[in-house]
Length: 82
Image (cartoon, rainbow, N blue to C red; front, side, top):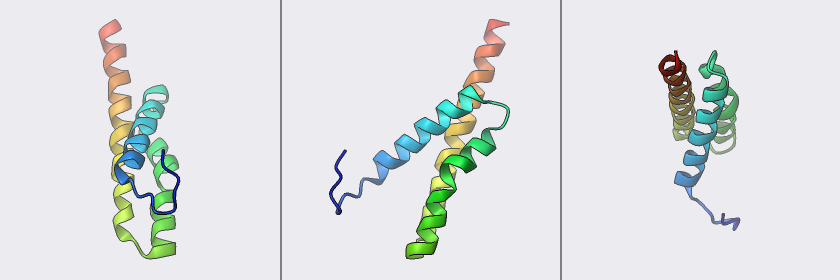
């Protein structure tokens, strides 16, 4: 990962958030919304407070999608095994 001050690879960050939220949703499927908020809420908070970047709210959508997909995969695996 590039750590230069000019590094701006939003796709890599969004992919990492999606994957982490998916793993958390899979491991704790009872509350995927909580995983999404825990993992993604700090991004819009900092983005809005520091730079008035309201587009950073989209990070919550990425984490919610990942967490719910992880929880759905968990439910599917449990259903298939039964």
